[in-house]
Image (cartoon, rainbow, N blue to C red):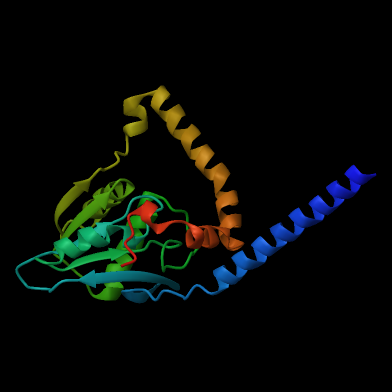
Length: 218
C-alpha cells in the first residue's frame, strides 16, 4: 500500500510539472513580439508577398535578385545581401508560404516560382537589367526565368545550385537516399510544429546557455 501511495503522489507530481512546463511555454510563446518585415509587402494575384531591396539603384548597374533555395526564408541571405548592396541594388524575397509571405495553395514547382517572381518584380516596378543569384533550387527557377524573360536578364550567378537532371545524372542510389532523407524530414515536421505551437522551442531557447551558440550578452 505504501508503494502505491508513493507511486500515486509521484505521478501527480510529474503531471503537475508537465502542466506547469506547458503553461510556462505558452506564456513564453505568447510574449514573443511580432517581427515586422524589413521590406515591403506587395499583393501578387491576391497574395501578400514580401520583397526586401537594399542598396542604391543606378542606371549603369543591374539589380541583383537573390532567389532562395527550397524552404529558405529571405533573412538567411542577410549577410550576402548586405555585402552585395554596397555596390548595387540587391533584392531578396519570400516565396508564397515562406517568411513574411502568405500561402496561396499554388503548387510550389519551378515554373510557378518563376511566374511568381516575375509578378513580384512587376508589382515592385523592377524591370531590369537583372542578375539572378539562385541558391540550390533557386538556380533552376533562375534558368526558367531567364529563358522566358531573356530581355530582362543580364546574368546568372550559381550559388551551390541544383540541376534539373541531377536525380537521373547521379543514379538510383542518389535518388533513393534523397527521397529517404526527405521522407524522414517530413515525418518530423509535425513534431517540430507541435513543439513550436506549444511554445516548447521558445522556452528551451530561453533557458539554454546562449554561449553555446556564440552569443555574447555583453
